[in-house]
Image 1 (tube, rainbow, N blue to C red):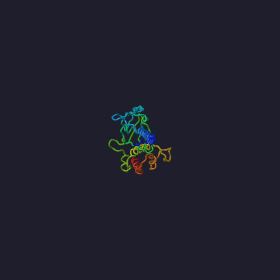
Image 2 (cartoon, rainbow, N blue to C red):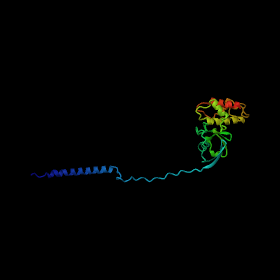
Image 3 (spheres, helix red, strand yellow):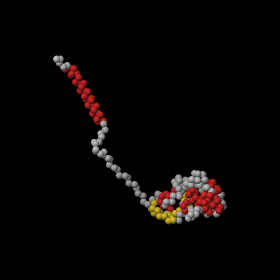
Image 4 (cartoon, rainbow, N blue to C red):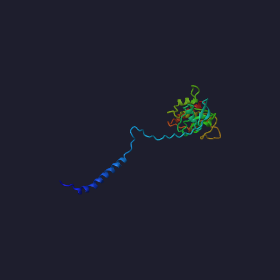
Length: 228
């Protein structure tokens, strides 16, 4: 029998040691890189819930208005506009919110006989005052002369600006009747003598109509003025 080649075995021993060391190191690195999963049946830990930040409370104020001849007692925040008070609190949605910047006139209402853009003023500023919206122009079931004229002369198309147009035109006729001059009145020191088309266009210039029904609006206002 031949003796084992002890010299060859001794030469292979360092290679085997290095190979086992590299294999063990690779296995350890693989295990360390693997994500740790929770044990079966053990619920995931949930982070503690943060309390929602407290919303600042705004005090409300009682606001008393007479709208279309009816008294209203509204509890409003000071920042509520007259437009939102009419629509959201009084339930009178005839007044429309167009630009909400006082540029289109769709929200025009009459306050103590004077037409204003209701989106540009706060409701609390009109405590105790009288407000007329488009719902208050008709008497019972009878349309006002201007409302009938708007229908007769087709002075609207989509109708969105019409409530503001009607309130503005109603106030316009009252203003002219009281002798109020406009930017086109020839002599502002005296009352204008006639409500011309130029006068009507100037006095209605704050009310925009995207449908372009301006000639018919002017005709409707003029015919009501002429009928007296």
